[in-house]
Length: 90
Image 1 (cartoon, rainbow, N blue to C red):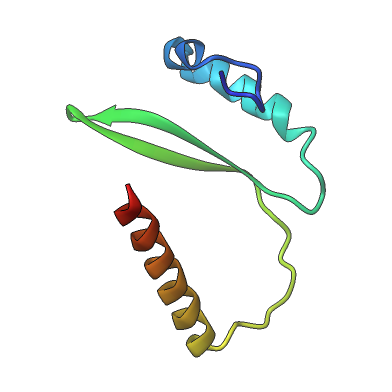
Image 2: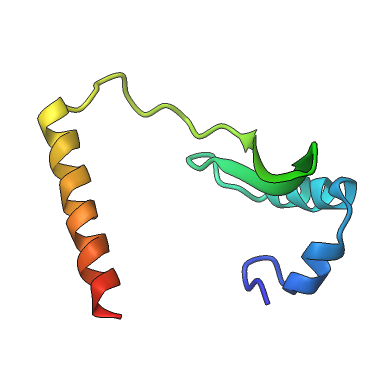
């Protein structure tokens, strides 16, 4: 069961794209001003499955200041090591 939407996964699998759009648009009305909403759905093209992302509501831009590249690299390395540490525990 998808707790945030109150829809079980079987219903989502059988749902048509148009019906899913209606639900997403209904949800978008309740999204706070400071938040954004992205919708991902499966699609098939030329016999190959994929995922398509649609931006329903853009999140507001908070500032134009870019982080220092050293900070970005540090964050990436921290996530990398945490991911593999947790993965190797199992």
